[in-house]
Length: 132
Image 1 (cartoon, rainbow, N blue to C red):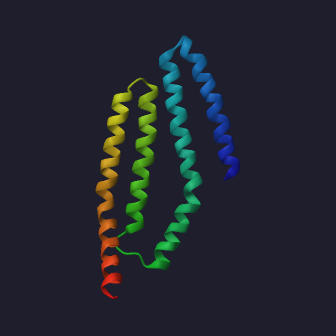
Image 2: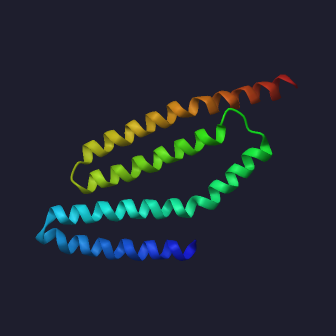
């Protein structure tokens, strides 16, 4: 996995230089190249996360977690990462205000999705403190 990360870093740096060089000649092509590199980097990043997902599934079965808590946490993480990546692309394309709005919407959705997890934590705290 570490080798894949270093390849991603090298590819991202080379792409960054290419985008800077293309920006002077063809801004649209440079933007498309940058967006394509972002998508490929994100896809490779998901491949890096595969062992983590396998561990979390094992943890879920061992811990007998209910109500799909781990699924909710993974959705929240995915929304956060997707929101940040989309926001970075929008910022690079010159739409910084739209990027900030998207980040805010992603944060609101993450808070909304985290409510069931917070309720489970509250129930757990009540059961622990009620037993004292």
